[in-house]
Length: 219
Image 1: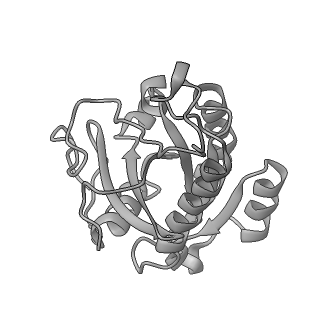
Image 2: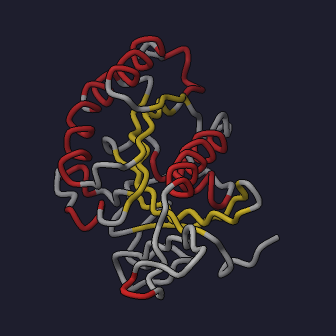
């Protein structure tokens, strides 16, 4: 098992979507295998990390939560800076949260890198008896907009691992196929035989990348 500070790639992934759709519980389920039924809306900036293995490479995911800002439509460009992946989350039992997906997608494409990898996530699949968003409808929307789609439940862990592993693997495939010059080479053009160097995306705030920011309220 790789140590927390040993990794080949560091990818920043953001969680976006309406307040109350379960973003913080998706974060805590994936990074700490925890779920808080009494979870309140996050206040302040929060992120957590977890490493996975892909092709014998250690991929460290730095996953950011929208921190309650979505309630005020005040998410800033700093939140998206450096992000290479995004999980756009809605609640399958609340159609209004799905209706807002289009607005979130537009905001993401306005503020994030044009090459960001996006996955549409229908959360709370355990509430199938209260479903108001047909999975076929969401899947068609995702296909139309060129993003992937999955349904998850942070409560019972359904597809949470798969959702994060899939997006991180896709990011890795894209990054590892690029020919990235070695910045230490002559004129930054890379030395002989260099193919790519590990990409490390620093956090946008000077905080420890092993624990959530202490300005957060709840997971």
